[in-house]
Length: 103
Image (cartoon, rainbow, N blue to C red; front, side):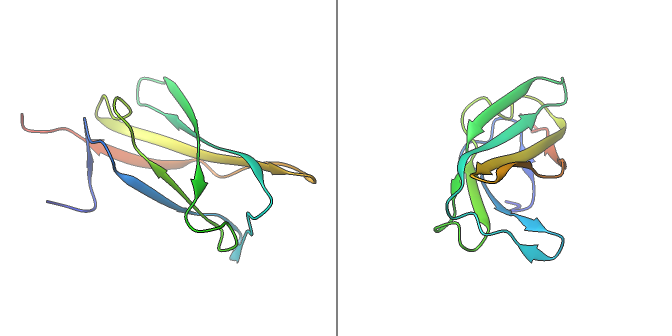
């Protein structure tokens, strides 16, 4: 089984997302309203909360794919957003592929 491919119907796939500003790690401790927005190939949008991988000081977030997220093959995109007392930020758009299954 390939650890590098996501397939239609996969559940439990963990996204480990590194948040950086250029080369610098963004410390996420003290942030709130952390969300992931996923855009499917058919342009439908899913938005969900996203958690720290450890405690946010390392700039790493994690998200576990749930039932129905990968309901089609093709190019998906995701974007992270978060806020703190200084403002609200959005990441770059990150494309990724979801592949078909044989059966």
